[in-house]
Image 1 (cartoon, rainbow, N blue to C red):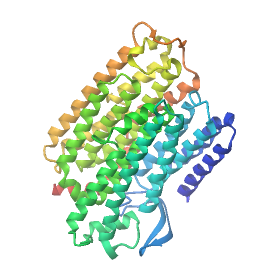
Image 2 (image 1 turned 90 degrees about the vertical axis):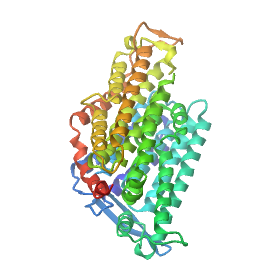
Image 3 (image 1 turned 180 degrees about the horizontal axis):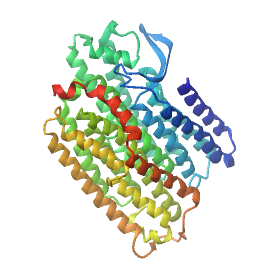
Image 4 (image 1 turned 60 degrees about the vertical axis):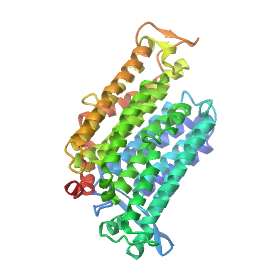
Length: 510
């Protein structure tokens, strides 16, 4: 029952912080968020799962209790972990305390509500990554939208209401489309499934139990469901051309919210794509391999080109996320051990690196009150530690060896170059690799303009070294990025073990 305890404690912590005085809220939220992090480490240290939870593997920390019955099918409290979900649970519990500390400087109004919503979002994120019943998972999935809407809409920038509404409308409409696609599969499976448990539905689909529904052929239903779910999750990732809500949300959101948005919430989309599209419907994914790979490469290059054109540091990092998520999609669609495993590893690596980049930009903004590239220069002289960590994070984004970003991209490229299920795989891989060159171009250009040379600031603020509580989370994130880059097997072995059942047979048939 440890997963239940972890989720329940985080919900209870959110309530406690909401009721606490403002002057205590930040420190109290950090102290309480350390408990789920300790719980995440405990889950990792005692992990005994094997295989994939949806493919008959051994599920770690499993609990299944029937909840209610709807339309002849039971809904259960069904949670558990495998090698794909556990790293994302640890990532979530690791990033939230750091994001809370990074909020101590910029958040000076309604602190109790802010930190309470942060913890409420963490609890629902844990639910998304642990739930193995569709309805339970969908409740957590939708509940994540609520705190994020308020965090952007109340504590965001001048256009916060527009950004919050755009975020909510885009993601909620996408959820509806995804829901319709999945439910069409369930109804077409008929009496072959008696619940909404994802392992049972996966087994029925693999056994060919999908039948005609309202006169629609099973193959048509499967492809329609795949497309509906893919489009729904593509908005959440986001990938081109469904990415337009993301830069607005990032620019208007306060820095700690951007850290969680890029670090964890975007991974909800890629995680769901892997769980639903590529695990439940691998034949349909393989049939669409070329267009999906093309979308992935376009996202890599187009996202990087958009970042190259930006002058706002936050927008630069935001569009970098669009580019990085393109690599994840490419890794998933190649259906190889290293492709799918590398894509999952890249989710964790990007979560750490993007969190570091947004946090470092936020620390600079706290001191300068500007994020515009042309408004400042020579920041390295005034904030040497912050700038040093920012530069290190940027090199991590560029794929510097011995950092987590290099490991993730290397695994993906190894998997995609040897992908029999994907026609023209070397061409797609080469084009995606070219995106790294563009990433290096815009990051080096932005750093040269803002960090080096004679000091210049187009405001009257006095700039000096950042407070310890602003720098400490940056240093912790940088250490984690290096550790994961030097020793990727911390997570990659369990990830690969869970990825193998997904790719078996698909690469041979492709």
